[in-house]
Image (tube, rainbow, N blue to C red; front, side, top):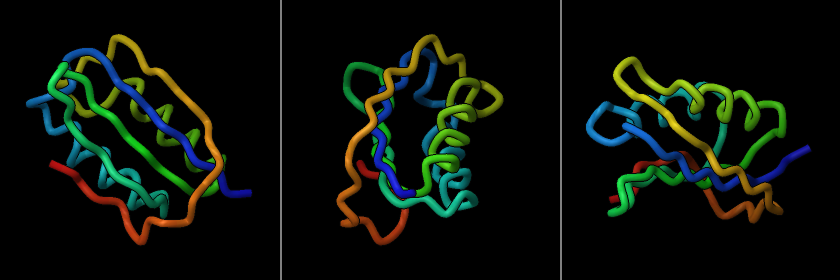
Length: 91
């Protein structure tokens, strides 16, 4: 069953290849959506796909790439919109 999720990730998550690594993981999991750095130092992800694969992405985000230090992840489940065609990095 497809679902949507919005993630707000806090910690040392900018300048450590978090977006590129998360994009690669999302593409590997066949998820659609986007990832973006926010001015407050967080990273935000909006993703859609199979619930189990979204959970795998959430689990991956808890550690992130090698130099990241994730302090907290806010997870908000939502109804999928079907508007995404791939998983992109937004600027």
